[in-house]
Image 1 (cartoon, one colour):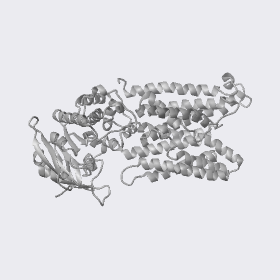
Image 2 (cartoon, chains in turn green, yellow; image 1 turned 45 degrees about the vertical axis):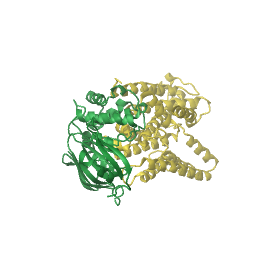
Image 3 (cartoon, one colour; image 1 turned 180 degrees about the vertical axis):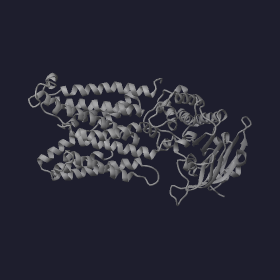
Image 4 (cartoon, chains in turn red, orange; image 1 turned 135 degrees about the horizontal axis):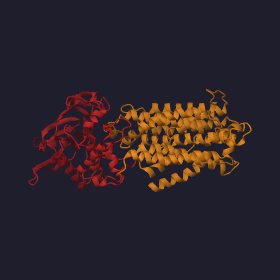
Length: 274
Length: 335
């Protein structure tokens, strides 16, 4: 269980960008952090990943405070997929995925057959096995994102499995830089991973429909504070959307898939008109 | 890709190692005067009468070894700086290390500082001190307030310091007389004519320390190319890796410059050439660059000694003449 309890953080201590956020990610959970640009989603994700320390409150993984756990120990359990990955030098897709094994190796140790096997399984799980020898820079946006997700799976994988239970995958706006086709591709991949692997997934996004079609629980974030949280049907409502984005919207259930779908109708006024 | 990283390292080290050893063995034989190895190694001829042995052991061998040390240090430091700054155009001299060294050497040459320490002359010592001063200034500027080492500030501070020190160099040069100016110019061109083993013996331990840190850095540098945030979520202590990279590469550069002066282009062309040949994994790129850098500079020095013999050109001119066009070709090729 990944838990944030009354977490505060600001790059400038006088102006906190995350203000008193509490949330739970149970094993196998699928949480969406939804909010407009600048609402503190990325910072909250960094706090959950333990790469920033809260100025107040705690982030715990199975009860252990992240600020007291060694970085490599956290990294073996939690992996982060950034919005976009640009490499300074050109590596092959397999090399990128093998970098995921870093927290499992000692200094000077090189990847063994077990690590290569886990990397191959991760490539398999994301449908990128055929790309393993391609240079990362030559891949399309969607392919790059799938390879980076494979690297994340390799990072939280243990021998014999591409990812284990109690592992957490954090994704920061994973589709923001992608066009529609790649967005659908990544959404389909995340849904499939969620069904097949015993991992918890946390995804931050400003895309209502992306969150509505994927997540089980949602946290609405605005100006660093939690506006509402809970099961998707309780949170994705016309009132919630109006409060979050200042937009009138209709919320319907798609007959085919049973997912919620949000249709924006008109702008009602300034954001956060609470 | 079926070959594991271990095998790729072994293949690269054996292949490029052969090249470096060949350069090391053949270079002392080349020169304006031809020498007989049999005579040079004949124990029956006293050293004072043995011209071949004198040329071999006093003139050419230390020079070849200096080429190996300086070439390997600058090539590897280039790899590390490029990885640290995530910028393939960085060189060992980007962050002001060489300008600091040049200013130090320059002050010693101009004002004829005759101090020495443990038998090392004033100029190399002053140049090493100058590079340490530059490193210290750039580092203290780049320590970001909140998180880690700001590579942007590192780059900007380094480039600015380079210009600032260059201005100081011109200022000092204004006060130098004609002979001193010539010596300074010669030093700035880069020159391996060490004529003694002393500077090599002094620089070697510093380089060994740097290379040991480079070996540890190989995997962290791979992760850093993902960006510092991603590297950290992969489990890397980013600040520690950046600090280790900055200081070890600066140490190697400072030691190399104190031996041979600021010899340009090796730190940029060798890493690029090696990446074209072996890919980007720093565990292969670093040892390969060390070996290719050594072979390349030894080769350039042979050209410098022989192409206009008996005139002895500064090796920095040769590396720039080869390196400049090659680098431009790389730029155009990338665009």
